[in-house]
Amino acid sequence: MEEMGRALLCSPFFSTICLGANALLLGGSDPQKERHLPGIAAGETTATLAYAEKNNRMDAEGVEATYARSGAGYVLSGSKSYVLDGHTADLLIVAARSKNSKGADAVSLFLVPGDAEGLKRAWLPTMDQTRRLASVELRDLLVPPDALLGEEGQGWELCERTLDLARIALAAEQVGAAEMCLDMSVDYAKVRQQFGRPIGSFQAIKHKCADMLMMVESARSAAFYASALAGQGEPDLQEAASSAKVFCSDTFFHCAAENIQIHGGIGFTWEHAAHMYFKRAKATEDLFGAPSFHRERFAKRMGL
Image (cartoon, rainbow, N blue to C red; front, side, top):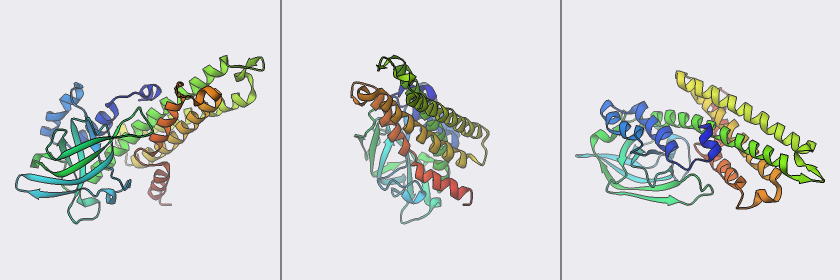
């Protein structure tokens, strides 16, 4: 994931593996796994998780799309926003709640083929050109009974677990991108001459690079710790995921901004890559919950 972050990889890997495949592995039945996972592993099928809506809430009450039982299965209605690669995914895992319901225990997840009748998708122009988001409309979309992922009413618990794993993967990606910003800054500081000497010889630039290095290594530790807990299935995963998401988001944004400053005028141009990292930093800061959300979530989990 770090290498993907360094390269600002433009690929549906994250949405397919970190969201789609993880949701299937966590909640899918054996037939569902056999039907979809081989295609994902072979690179023939892309998938994503459609949970967010225009209200941009990160709790179960943010799910306003609905489902209703019918003789042939379930009918889904509503819309989703900010769906990673949602405009091209072959399989969408959609969060919806039973009609006229409230609470997390009314949310379920459904497998929706990308070519399903009643599904309308559109690409959303965003700040970050390297990661595509989409809006999705569910127009009385009918899915069969076996499209239900996991147990009915347990969708939000499954969704939260999937999102925590995705947050940890995103944190690792942010570490790689932040380190790339540091490397770009150091390389440029060695060759850019001012007052007859490389700008890297000035104490102010040295301090900036040293601070960036300290933040990158600390962020890497946070991401590694959260990854270790995810691999062991520890109950403290939520705290670790939120902690890693906050620190790695702050680190990436700081390093991306400092990279532009150290590059000076050329760093502000469209022709230089620095602005791409800055835009990715800002976009990933809000993806899967802004730092303010995760700080509050962490505090609640700690009983503060």
